[in-house]
Image (tube, rainbow, N blue to C red; front, side, top):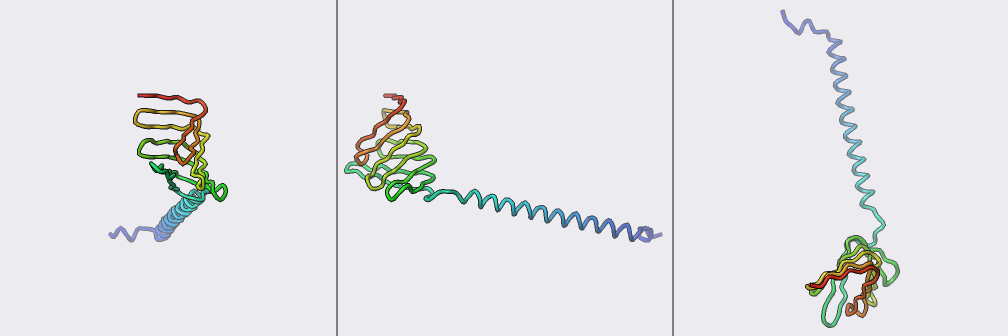
Length: 149
């Protein structure tokens, strides 16, 4: 005899309905998770940053000092707070720190965070620094460690 004649049609219908319901729930749960991820991505991208990856330069008669950071916020017309991986680079040295107030008009910079100065023969670790006179004077302050090679 034929096996399909012995199958209960109500049982097959209930089993099919349950499978369809589970499939629909699975699709909606995945869609809900995707929407939640998209909302989280949008929330993390919208931050309180005025400039993303700002780049500036301090121009001097003898050299240029290039300044880069991950974030920047305008404090006023001339001053910008640079944050997160701030780097000063020239042909002679580099300085790395986390926060700097850069004055575009006077071309000065000031930091009160841990700073690392590196040049060919010198390494300085300090609690902060000031760059004045268009990069001609760099003053390190706080607890400072100097290594001369």
